[in-house]
Amino acid sequence: MERHYGWVIVAAGAVITCLAMGAMFALPVYLQPIAAETGWTRAGISGAMTVGFIVMGVAGFLWGTLTDRIGARPVILAAAAMLGVGLFIASRANDLLVFQLAYGGLVGASGGAFFAPLIATTLGWFDKHRSLAVSLVSLGAGVAPMTMTPLATVLIENFGWRAAMMMTAFAATMFIIPAAFLIRRAPEVLAEAPTPGSDVVPSAKPPTSIGILLRTPQFIVLAAVFFLCCGAHSGPIFHTVSYAMLCGASALAAASIYSVEGLAGLFGRVIFGLLADRIGVKRVIVGGLLLQAAGIYAYIYVSELTHFYLLAVVLGLVYGGVMPLYSVLARDYFGPKVMGTVLGGITMTSAIGMAFGPVGGGYLFDSFGDYHWLYIASAAIGLAAAMLALAFPPKTEDAAPKDALPA
Image (cartoon, rainbow, N blue to C red; front, top):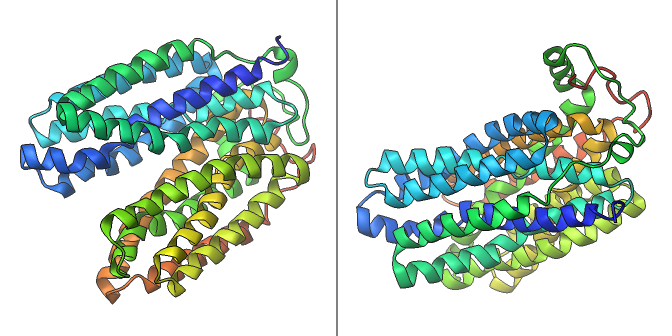
């Protein structure tokens, strides 16, 4: 039973990420009713999400580092309470600044606690099937738009946005807390099992050790590739609906492209996870990044809805499948005792990359009057990510930093 408990961690992690990410990223369906009732600008309401991305990235690093010291369970419990409080305050807010601080600050900070801690804990439980296990945990985030978002829509229609957000706060917190008690650290014998590239020893000075870790070639390349990967696809994802509508698609049909991408991403997580376990994580990441760059570039030739759907399938499979694999590659380079710090660090860089795409895409459209250069620039960034991924150091015993463990 102890040997197979890792799959319980996977199931609990998928449920937690679905509830947490679903509650946080449902803000778009609240946008219209909030604006209609309060008179706040849509830019001001959306600004809460921008703040949330930035705070989530920074908080993710801090939560990850804390996980290395006290474990994921107390981190997730604290974040669940923060999520509930943040949503509750936002649902009662009568001032835009209060709403932005509650949603962007508290909810955003809680969002950073559900990726790095859960993935780091999952990696500690698996010697084999790591890629599949991590991909299945991230499956919860892929399911969230198809479950939590429609639920929020129904609640808003029946009870109004304030009651809907308050009920979401209560429900998410009440389900995450018991699931969090299923999360526990892997037994020492498994957590310390040697893997290629993860032969590490404790260091006497934790702050210095973390500084050394963040300056290693392994971390720098990994974080840079993750940053470029997210910077490449965030712009096209964010502006897809607008582009499809410019090409003549109705608002509803254009919005359905996201659903296709989300569904394809679920399959991508499983397929890429299985493939990475068979042929290697690095090969799958490089191949996926090349396919992503090609798919993004193909947008400049798209004008019909069916073609948008086809590209949505391709890109959904690719970025849905590749994103969880960075954490698996990180485990090949670093020991289990610093996984939270490492994953928190690369998550922070990915959040920054995600923030550039929408703004950059809007600037290019305003400057040139179409999205042509957005897709060219994004494809170039995606190609740069694939080229940089070739620089991933080999997984040898000498590749792992020796002083990368906090005492």
